[in-house]
Image 1 (cartoon, rainbow, N blue to C red):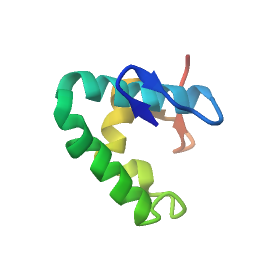
Image 2 (cartoon, helix red, strand yellow):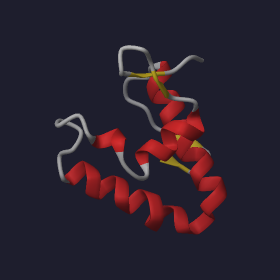
Image 3 (tube, rainbow, N blue to C red):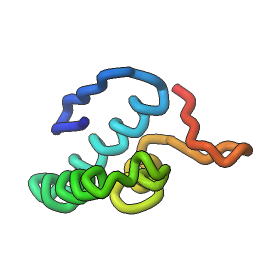
Length: 83
């Protein structure tokens, strides 16, 4: 989870850190609107259980956070990141 300049990561992996860094960049760009335009939609996507279906990162705002954080789709079609 990202809240302002703070990242809260239970299991820090390069992929997770990069993704959350993308949310940090979203926060800088959107300011106070971040909580509504990104945070709310992230909670809704999680509530729809899209993570278990493998679709959580495919839509807004998660795919945008991936792009901003340097997460990419590798040759095998999986999300990947390099620190």
